[in-house]
Amino acid sequence: MNVLILGGTTEASALASALAERSIPALFSYAGRVATPKPQPLPTRVGGFGGVEGLAAFLADKRITHLVDATHPFAERMSRNAILAAQRSGIRCLALTRPPWVPQAGDHWQRVVGIEAAVNALAGPPECILLAIGRQHLAAFAAQPQHHYLLRLVDRPEASLPLPQHRVILDRGPFTLEGDLALLREHGIQRLVCKNSGGEGAVAKLTAARQLGLPVVMIERPALPERREVHSVEDVLAWLA
Ligand code: 3Y8
Ligand code: NAP
Image 1: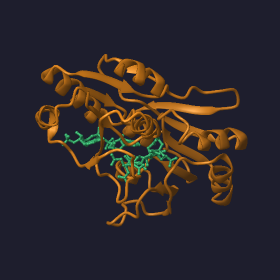
Image 2 (image 1 turned 45 degrees about the horizontal axis):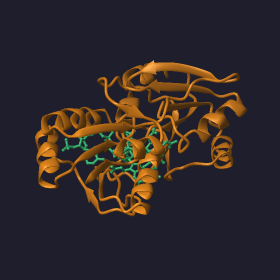
Image 3 (image 1 turned 30 degrees about the vertical axis):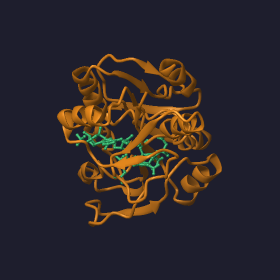
Image 4 (image 1 turned 180 degrees about the vertical axis):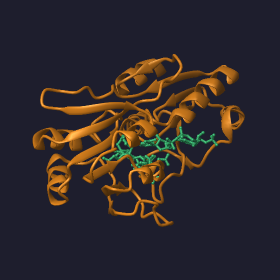
């Protein structure tokens, strides 16, 4: 057996620890999106594979027998490529994901599909807005320049950002409730924009928003093709067994 984990999430890290503890031969893979990704207890590669063909070649070269896609629900291209490359290579593929968050009593969510719809949802008078969607899609929000944006990023951006009024907070999750309550209060946040990532690592800001009665623009996940999917490390171990 030789497992390839496509990582980048809390669940991927938990799975890596479980395989390392059981001395199950496995490789961990990061895209290389951030300067210093969290070290893993498995041999780790960083960088793209080169599309479906590149991944299929990698699976063959490394004699991978099981592919676990434990990437983030918004890592749409990677997940699509994983399904196609596994089919092409004839190897088993499983997705390890977490269920989406659902609104609870006291939540004020405006659910949108896609970044553009999130930008359009911000039409209106100037507000202090926490943009907790990372770095890759910030430029789109220049279409709503009237707001004061608080950006939470993993790395300091190289280029200057196209948002006229913004402040950058450098931090990587998992985040805590008291930390996110303090962040929202300190910066007088009036609205949040975030992705429906699910899981525990990024949920604190939603709990904090609920306690402070703040509205949230919630970007729903991209649709993915039908695939085998589990929500726990135990289910992955059972599948490997
Ligand atoms: C490079 C590798 C672990 C994994 C930790 C999880 C939790 C903390 C919360 C907010 C939301 C956001 C962002 C976020 C969270 C976990 C998880 C998660 C959200 C690291 C990591 C990598 C990345 C890539 C990065 C993206 C960005 C997204 C920041 C490691 C820390 C906003 C997603 O600067 C950039 O280009 C950053 C890019 C993709 C989204 C974006 O579009 O900018 N994650 N995040 C992975 C790789 O190279 O393959 O160092 O751990 C991982 C984690 N980030 O093992 O503990 O499981 O989701 N990551 C979102 O959810 O909206 C922050 O600020 O409230
Ligand atoms: P994406 O848009 O779906 O993928 C774009 C390309 O990046 C892929 O086609 C692949 O390049 C490469 N790639 C992505 N994930 C990879 C991995 N784990 N190992 C090797 N190559 C990878 O991906 P993304 O949304 O930018 O996410 C990149 C990474 O950040 C993933 O590990 C994901 O789990 C993590 N992450 C993303 C988010 C988010 O909000 N998107 C949040 C938290 C963590 P090739 O085509 O060249 O193979």
